[in-house]
Amino acid sequence: MRKILNVALPKGRLGEKVYDLFEKAGYGCPTIKEPGRRLVFENLEKGIRFFWVKPSDVGVYVERGAADVGVVGKDVLTEYGSDVYELLDLGIGKCSMAVAAKADFQDDRSKPLVVATKFERIAKRYYAEQDREIDIIRLNGSIELAPLLGLSDVIVDIVETGATLRENGLVVVERFADISARLIANKSSFKFKTNGVENLVDGLRKQIGTNKSDD
Ligand code: PRP
Image (cartoon, rainbow, N blue to C red; front, top):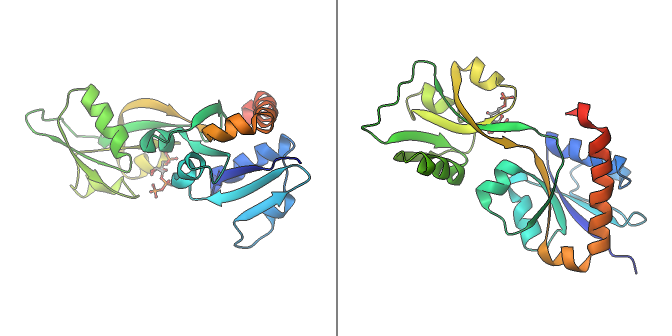
């Protein structure tokens, strides 16, 4: 019997691009494009089942084996430290992890730096490497507001086009990591569904090769 590959896709803009890549690689599931609130879609003929998952939860589904593979941004993967295999850089959803601040910000090293971020672990690691003491404020979104309202000195966040920073009078202090979407696999699925996973990786890799200008 053919083994079905269960795939956790990140819901949203990135997920749609990722699905298109899967479709081009031969893993189409046309019902996924129908309007509605369904979260599970399968194409048994192709041996594939997709789930729409909140992007920050993809690693959890894959680590625990509810999904065999998934696609997640390197930012989320690093932040949550999921115990999974990282198989492939899909080359989409490219952005950077950066420190940003108001244009006139001056760091006063006699005081802890107040850092607002969604990426607490990444920010702590970055400043530990700089040997800079910080006071971290964990926010869930609209991080750019924090320095504007005096809640923080800087932010650690992803920057894609830079428009959000620009339109809110912030500037990049330092870009310190490249981010893009990664294909990840559950460790035992990788062992027990080896063919399925390898075929998927090969199919996606071919598409990435021909898709470079699509980012
Ligand atoms: C992300 C990020 C920035 C923005 C960067 O926010 O947190 O705010 O995108 O993109 P840009 O450089 O192209 O402007 P997201 O849209 O995920 O919303 P959030 O505020 O809820 O984090």
